[in-house]
Length: 134
Image (tube, rainbow, N blue to C red):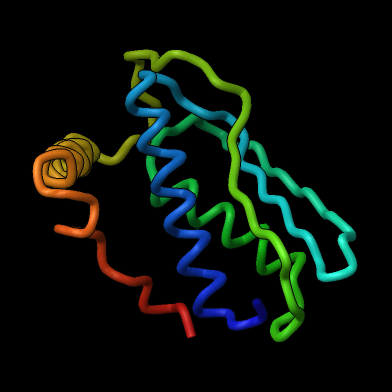
């Protein structure tokens, strides 16, 4: 696959699945990683560590996409694309000095979306597309 839209969509779906699993297991990830495999089976892995561990799909996706953009040439065929996390830990209750006051709203929204998806299926509701994606 060499279509950037399809690769970005796949990256987003995988990031959402990883975040869902982290939430189900009540864990946060400190590192986000991607795996790329080219048609000749050459495999590349890249990772980046977060300043604050997360289980947020948006943060995981943003970092995975940055890693993809830094390591993939548009138009180059990709045989395999994967998103993973490491540095797992249980959540702590202490807030950072830089936490935004509306994080509670975002957490409630994520919880509402998960509940709807659990009740009616994963295709019933999704977050909107990133306007910066070509």
